[in-house]
Length: 354
Image (cartoon, rainbow, N blue to C red):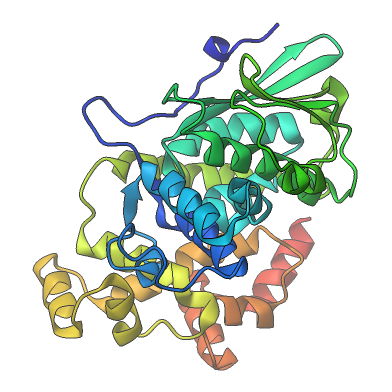
């Protein structure tokens, strides 16, 4: 049997640091609450800067904010199991670049191991790992806080998230899950749980886990792409190295640009607003770091392009839009300045090589 101690797992905060979660992770939970008719300002006192602050990809929040938001949403809506609603709302963007890497893994076992290595970037609430015991395997969710009842919302979210993400990446409506175990007590109303988790549910269990046949975790994923996984790993290694350090304005601007590129041209005013600073201040701070918005924009676009070039399903028109170019000719000029060939010539050379 493989145990947690056999696997390289990066989970909780470094010693002496407050555990945190990413803005994207918290935003997914808040959006689930809004979908259940919570008011837009319902959590402003829990989230510094209010819901708008969740759009900033460089901001992190105390880990307990997630449970506090979900507990309040239950109180406001009367819905038991808001964590379930959160878990069902988890998609690749929720997990930032980790999410896109996960759907490119070879199988669920690889996906779980990859996530275990980089999960600190998303959340420092718990660690997830896979234990194999012959024909049966256990996907374990182990919170760092031992209070099972306080951790109920996020535990429910993880169980629902595992189920939803597994169905999503395997392109199947039915997972071969046998049981789901949770350490907290059973709620009076199980309707939300039974609708989202149509498996045998065990409460007041010894640990939180999904019990399933081992073969499930080794089914090939339809979107497997080893080159993409390796490329994401290099980027995530850099992000891990920066996680416990104050970000420079250059890094904050870089990540800000990449977070909004898909929505159109990432201009300096848009990025400054996203980062919660004045345009003049951002321009000055970048100059102090011997950088400029224009240089960072080009670097962010080229960095993102490396990912898209590994995905042969993308068209050049789609890539241009994803990089925030409204004019395809501008994308072609930029591409040629980076690779000394046009996109058409690049594609021809790649086909010849293949």
